Image (cartoon, rainbow, N blue to C red; front, side, top):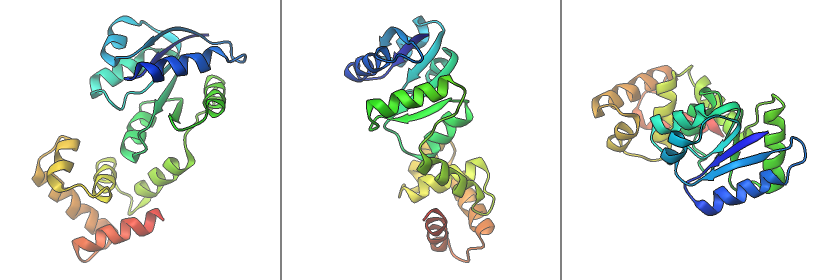
Length: 196
């Protein structure tokens, strides 16, 4: 199986390549370990397996990296936010692997993903489901809720979501209505209660 590895840190890219080389089932040959998502997106071509960290790149570069996976795409990241997980998961990632996982667990995830099984951390799947079912929030409302629970001010939330501060206030108001909260401070309490 032909593979490429993309990570902003050369040490991580080479370490992951070494772990993948040691696999017997499936037999993985890492063609190249890239340290830059832009470089990989421009020159790598397609591979049977793409293991990459797209959390540090902008949306278009991340999308190009994901498209390099001819068969299987594994997101390897330290990012444990529900918004990043949801974006990658909905883009069709076969596995979402955390960098803190052991090499054994990484190999197991790659083995399952190349076998057609989707792999993700249980806690992120549960948080994503809880946010989506919290008053049946839309995708944007769920993303706002996660950023809000992260303690970010409206200005930073607007920046990360690519919307105006007014749009953030509207999202907050709509979430408040859906959750049946009487005051804005209750929104945080209700969301925290649904996630624990």
